[in-house]
Length: 200
Image 1 (tube, helix red, strand yellow):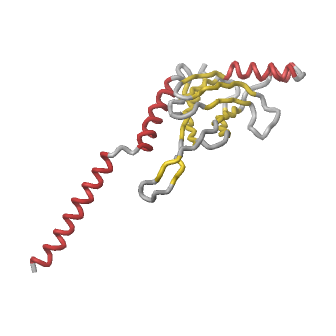
Image 2 (cartoon, rainbow, N blue to C red; image 1 turned 180 degrees about the horizontal axis):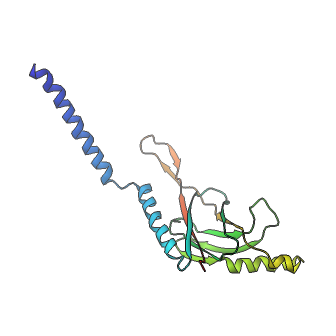
Image 3 (tube, helix red, strand yellow; image 1 turned 90 degrees about the vertical axis):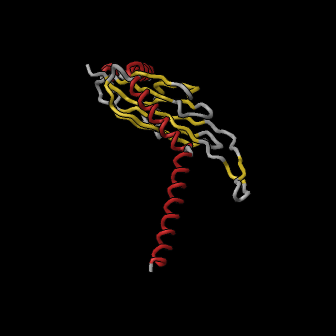
């Protein structure tokens, strides 16, 4: 009778040991994507620190994949109308070709939207920008278009539309060691944006 119970117990112990060894092996192997997410967490902290002395209002991490054509990813942020805002960008999550950042007063579906700010060569760096100069640029464009000065003086930036322009890249091809088939390498990047407002 003891022999009957000994075999299942021995089998259970072998499976447990094997499972623990495999689990430990997976923990010891660094998952590149998990490592990338940990890095982004650090970039968010740096981004938030760059807002000082502005009060933190939120953050947004935008992930993207490089493609064989240029394209945009747009992010909308809302603002409290009478407050000055600081936007802090951290682009250390961009490991491949640099991107372009454009900030508009309206979403991309509007042809008459105004480009308030642009920065080219974004990748592996940090920078901040305030809404004060953006509002002045919007007012200047409206003056040039003949908008009444009384209307211009009441203008506020209620929302901002951040457009990330991702350039086309040649896709890398790798051979899958298991199947021998050629597969396209997915190249990804991410940019962190933190937002803060003047609390005075």
